[in-house]
Image (cartoon, rainbow, N blue to C red; front, side, top):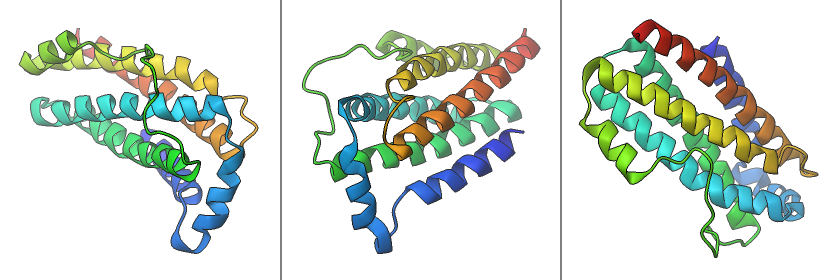
Length: 180
């Protein structure tokens, strides 16, 4: 099931991420991105960076095959989405960061990340899953910013993030039950 989702989202990403032949047309289609879409991109890029970092930690520390597979999936998919969001900001000549600090749902504290990195074995796996569930739930809250977007690409991305991360949360909750 996760493989099918990954393939579907990768296909959507290939369609949505511009190639050399249509980059200017694609950039023009992004000119109608509104403030919500720009703010979403500015917030979701660091949000995805944290999930990728957490996944990289899991790839080094976990021995659980399901967690390793999930971490590779998160790293790949969110890396693609991060590139897409960065393109939005570049194409609209927007800042890569917000001018003010805004609390992002699901972001882990420095203390939580440091604690995760110190853990090993099943304790690491359990904590990783709990924290990644929290992180994904935050992303689902944030995606509401663009779920009703007038921009087709933004609306498609909102739907893809919602679908993928909802399914990953379900999978992580099942994995967590198996670890207890």
